[in-house]
Length: 134
Image 1 (cartoon, one colour):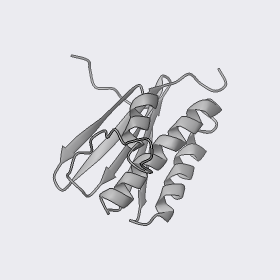
Image 2 (tube, one colour; image 1 turned 90 degrees about the horizontal axis):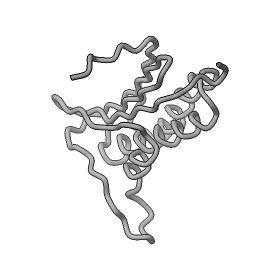
Image 3 (tube, helix red, strand yellow; image 1 turned 60 degrees about the vertical axis):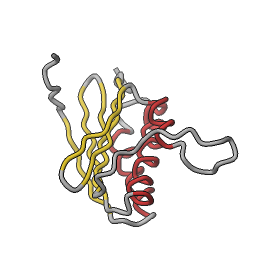
């Protein structure tokens, strides 16, 4: 079994259960990453944060927390909400306007998962990265 990873840098934010939180969370995380990873990684993270915070606000109907963990080899983003229901990947029909968020996470992240406990859950994803300016 692998030893638990120790992240060198951690940032935490809390956002209310409002659709305005989606852009606020996306911008907070991408602003912190902008000098440390490539713009392509920032773009992917922005999209994934948007999707997961949207899920917390729209489906969990909950305020959410966003945690960004970083080290020299990668990043981990965790979105916590107040709903214990575990999200599942959907396969929406081509004309359906919603339901692709976890498909996006699954295609972009190197690893992702859900940690439950108590009254809520945390959906997380990880990306291996190289520094933007080695």
